[in-house]
Image 1: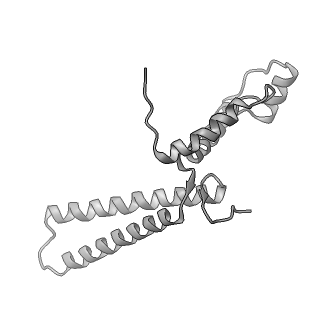
Image 2 (image 1 turned 90 degrees about the horizontal axis):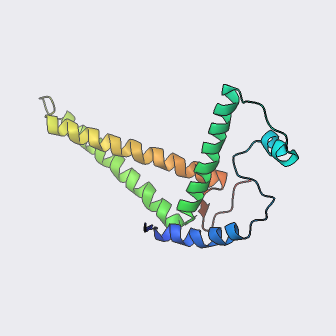
Image 3 (image 1 turned 90 degrees about the vertical axis):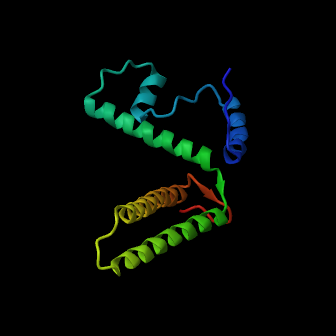
Length: 154
């Protein structure tokens, strides 16, 4: 038997979703279907084979939908303090990077390999945090991530 370990945020999200899943009416179809596919399924029409373009579009739609669902489930309600801490950490990393860069530029000799590795590591951390930050901002704007005390975008 497998044991699933959930974060506190995931556990808080799981209960309402489980309740909602138990209350689904039988007419609801699986997510990821196009309007045409839902109509064909409802009317009992056997669809013809899909073109490669239709199939790839269907895959893209399913990925987008499932990604939204997973983000909503994983993030749940985000506190503004969590995002403030993320912004603060990003700013600290950028400041550290700039400081080291200027410090290493003061010498007359080329940077040592460990200095280059340190700068590279900081740059990669900054890039990773910026990527994640953009993903979170997009989730907030889409309504996938709910920020406590912030009204959803129109």
